[in-house]
Image 1: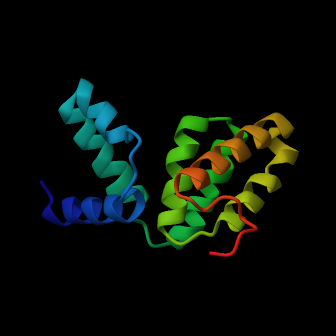
Image 2: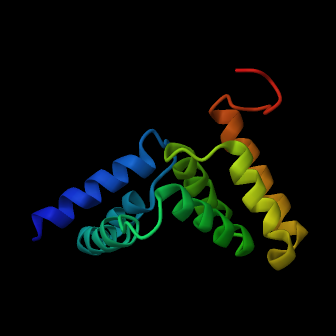
Image 3: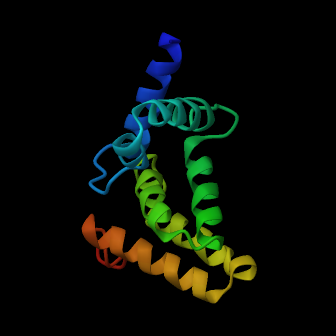
Length: 132
């Protein structure tokens, strides 16, 4: 096993998913098959998410946009939290969601905004207008 890949996977997973209480995909995969969970994690988190071609903030905003258009709200919830963890503001995340309505439709946008609001409420970042 490539020690460098394992370290990169752990580092990236910590950056993206630190403090997330929801079940992470890795935990779900592992409950069914430890080996495939390891392989998927090393590839997705250690190779794809860890690439340095674009900043982590940009990568997570792209992910939020794609998951919004596809209406994958459970996965979107996870990646909204990851976006916040890498420094995206709630306003940036909302703007990306609004930008997708042309391609995904208003129902997808509304579902994504409800998911964003729910995450922000849990993190005590809602409402946005209140001074912190």
